[in-house]
Image (tube, rainbow, N blue to C red; front, side, top):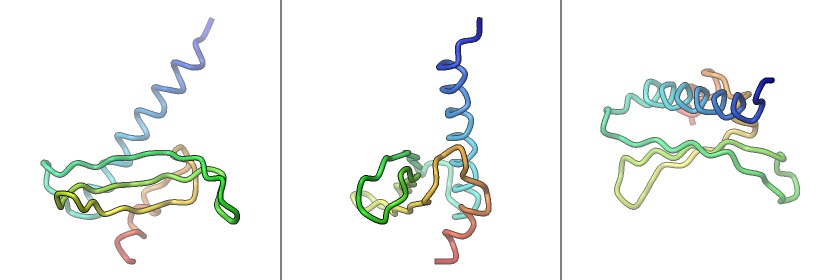
Length: 86
């Protein structure tokens, strides 16, 4: 019997590691800069139901924050690269 909850968590963990890697590459971050990836449910009107929030902690007390209007599992490298253009 397969544990779907466990395999979903493994999948999410791998995706978080992958997205953090893309963020570090795209923003040319040093290894000591923390990157936080969070998937949030949005209930505001006009907001997608689930979005991925990326916080880059390179300035104490003032993290850079970016939102991608799709679930973490759907985030692609091009989504991250496009954040650097803005």
